[in-house]
Amino acid sequence: MSELNAVVFDMDGTILNTEMLYPQVSTEILRRRGLSLTKDLTDAMMGRPAPKAFQVMIDWHDLADSIETLHQESEDIFADILETSLGLMPGFTELFKSILEAKYPVAVCTSARRDTAIDLLGRFNITPELQFVIGGDEVEHGKPHPEIYLAAADRLELSPSEIVVFEDSHTGCKAAIDAGTHAIAVPGDHSREHLFDGAQFVAESLHDQRIFEQLAIRFPT
View (cartoon, one colour):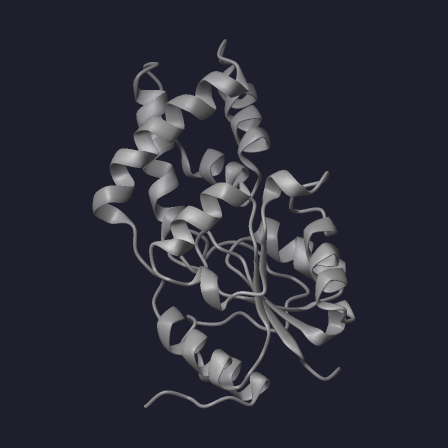
C-alpha cells in the first residue's frame, strides 16, 4: 500500500446529511407534478452534478420542464429545508479533528457547485481548515468520471494512490476508485445497498476504527 499523505472528502452524504435532504426536495418537485419519487430514481440521481441529476429526473418521468427550471425550483425548496434540517454526518467531527491533529492536508471534492459547498461547509466552520474545495461546476466531467479526483491529486502534488478519499455513494466511489485513490466507502442509510466494488473497505460510519488505523491517527475515546 502506498504511503497516505492527504485526505479528500466528498461533501453530500459524507460530511453533511444533505443526501438525506435532497430526496425531500425531489419529492416536493414531483409532488407538485402529481408524481412520486422512487428509491430507484433517488439512486440514479445520487452523487451526480445537479444538471445531470435533473436530466435523469426529466428522462425518468418524461417531464416537460427544463434543467434550469428544476434547478431553480429545487434551490428555493432546499433553502427552506436547510434552515431546520442541515447537520453533520455521524463521526465526522471526531475524525476531522484527528486528521487535522495529524497534519494531513484536507480537501473536499463535491458534485455540488463550489459556491454552494463553500456556503454549506462554512456554516460549520469547516472551510478555513481545507486546502481547497473543488465543485462539480469546475470540472468538465462530473462523477462517476474520475476527473475531479485527478484534479485534486494535481493540486495536492501527490499521486492519487497517496490520497484517502471518503465517499458515500456508488457514483462517487467509482470516481475515486477509477482515479486510483485509496477509496473508502462510508455509506449512510441512503446508500447502504449500493455496490462499492474496488473500495478498500466499506466503513460502518466515519467512526469506524479501521479508518483511524489506516491513517495512523488517534481514535477518539
